[in-house]
Image 1: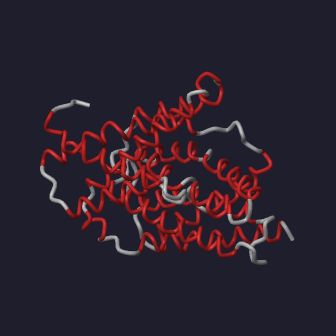
Image 2: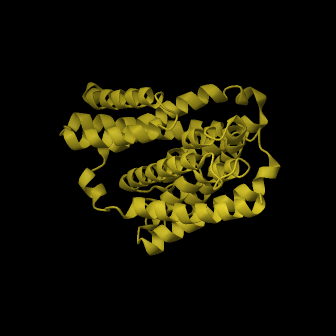
Image 3: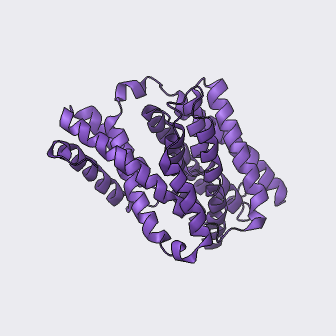
Length: 320
């Protein structure tokens, strides 16, 4: 960072939003600090008139934290606990969720290619984390990143509440719950909260299904890099940090020495990405974002509901 006194106000503002978001996330596992930071940043940007010094500090923070956070996130892709028996159903659910949410968002809701791709990524892989990685790889607009994260968050929280309400009923048995919850809810915390209502064994199995889904992030990121120059994507550059992301993902799964640093790298990545999304929230024009209206969250919710219903029918057929 080309540090100067002129950027201090913006950097401090990003730091405050980041710390507050991380602290609030400890209150409940369903609260994702990445989501909280972008929402808090967005609200603050609409309440205060940021001067040039604040804006330059926010931009400088984003320039540093985003690539560093994404590069380190590669170490979080751990396949050591990969269970081959979980792969067929998880792969089916991932492909169904991604394809249906992308096609529905793009051609039914009429959203742009970039926003549709981000919504599909968030719903099918791992929520805000996947969105920010893919958005940076493809070069999508900040407004699309913000809208997709909020849309996926709303959808995931709704799904989490629905699954918890179904606990103890005949509509969702303890045999089918891990598969359905682990392959449909977008964010890790949401999976944990919903699955815990069915018992510890359900929680353990649902988390394993979720971990298999997260491994698909590398594939989606490669696709995002390949189509970065097409409609709805900005720039089409080849960011260096994606190369580091893939390199660390490989090294952390083949080298025990590198893998021993996974926990520390994970904490550092979470902090940096939370700061990056705080910067994005602080730099987004709320009026521009609101122009998209309710179409993105509705597209995310409807497509998730249809895909989840199909998966639920397959689960019911499998366990009956």
